[in-house]
Length: 191
Image (cartoon, rainbow, N blue to C red; front, side):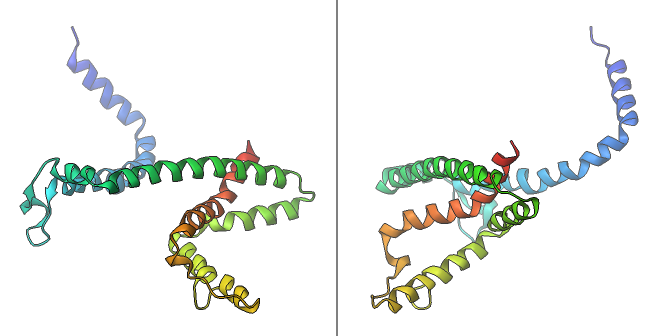
């Protein structure tokens, strides 16, 4: 038989003993509750015929009808295929490039030079995706982009990179690898 009185007494005794450790963990717990668990409640919208005027609690509940509608279209297969393929490419190329750059960084002579290159290569990882998108725009813009300016100076016609569907897999892969390669390389270098 379990003695609830002793369990409660030992619980409060351990809380009193570890009060400073609990206070140290409290900000982390609050962070996860506020930014990870509370937002999960709003996933309820996926199961409603959402109407902004009626709000989340006033909208009509439709259950899995939204998902049935989605998976009846051809777009569901294409989205699932693209998600899987992009993630495979990101994982494989990200690992290969990260290890290669980590090996190159380990071969550098001089502590200052090594730290400088590590800092420079880590910089894209520390930038937000919005800033990375603007950097990509600076390179790929059809009017003022660096690549199109180079093409024009060589006598060619500018390319509208954002309107070319065949360019997007390469653009997304390159930008994703470029942004994460510094962090990966430093992690592999550390191991």
